[in-house]
Length: 331
Image (cartoon, rainbow, N blue to C red):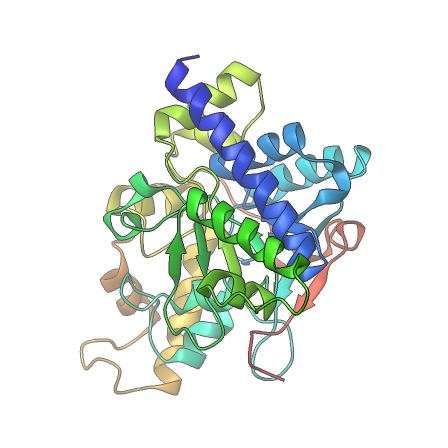
């Protein structure tokens, strides 16, 4: 392992320990590691297990309803390991406006449009609302996309701030230390730093411990530690996430729908319902299959099926503390 990677590992651990301390101080809750079953999540989980006590963090997996069955089973395996080590882990499923559990196939007709790179309403509902009023640990890295460059390790997204604001590890440690010092003073003034103010209000805080890591760093760390990872990477996948994600490359989408063809049928059915709800969506779309062909070219290769959504929701979810969460701001 290179000295550069060793330095990154130490900084990531420092980040996790600081985030844990601040979460306990301002939220009176442990940090929440948002675990997707991907390689970045595995790195963060292993780092946390190495530098934190079991009661200093929790692990949460958001059921998006469009993860592959392979990922679903892998998450169950990891959660079984965590449970044996006394680490709290749970799964959450979001609910829609009707107060009932929702999924991608319901969202598409509700939104009356397919999810796209520009309008990814699916992420907002199925993933990003699952850790309200907590310190959430994410596997975001700067080299994943140009959009993620220019951010930093600590971020806030709540209160009166409509857009996320980011802070370095060094700045965060400094303002936290100064805030603690002022709390010790008689009639001490309230520290009004943006980050501290947000955390005192218990709004959403996000932390990206491996923000500066490269893809090579991630694989070098997993290989060095002998840690297991999602089997999908050995199937030729470079990213593990929602099947049909708008951010996936054209080539990957073709592979996904070839490997998991039932998802294609779910999307076509959802697009049919979308056109019923919004028949003027596009004059060239006559049916769900037309939308699908526009959204992505149909794959001709079928290699395996998938478990149904209801099968997955019934498979061991209660054992992991299934949480039904409403999107933030809805009652």
